[in-house]
Length: 268
Image: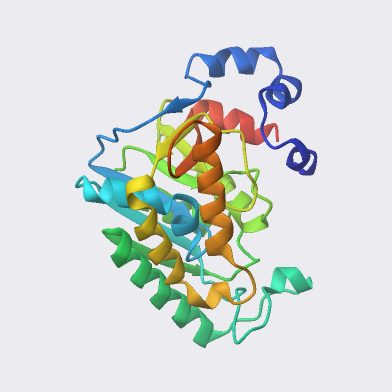
């Protein structure tokens, strides 16, 4: 997977790593870049490794959908205990196993709830797995399967499996290992970008919602102490727009049916 991080997910990389047959199959599902404006969903599910990933990766689209009346459900896998507290850097930067800081866990939950209110998220779910220790365990897989059965989403969003963060990749592993029959092979999966810019085939203009997204990002004050995520994320959104001739800001995604997404993940 590390070799991918040098090239992100380009068409050339796809051809080289996965072979022609997979590319041919993928092209049937609009691998080429499309600008998407309409999201006619009643319920969507956003999978976030940590409290803030949803906001950073797709806060603009979340606001766009919630404004249109879509029920947005966000599930946070980890408790945020490895984030920034009292000025200390994230534990992954120090090469340490995150310690369980209850005050930080509670603070990050409060920040996620505040950001959720700003973005119009209908339901927040906190599973509370420790940062850095997330695994595709039976309990995590069952929790996600039960949530899908209970909410019946029409699309699932999650961070790209190319994101340079272990917990982000594990969330993909949980999705890929759902029990047979939980989702059909054609179920739409959209991967958003945070740590690692990726090859995108879907682009969403979020210019109308960029101020709201910025406000939601700022709600995660504890995480802005060591890195200016607000500046970095908004700059990425501006780049995605500018390079694709959108006047304003845009969020990029890699979209594929579950069957194709599963194949790409397993070959990464």
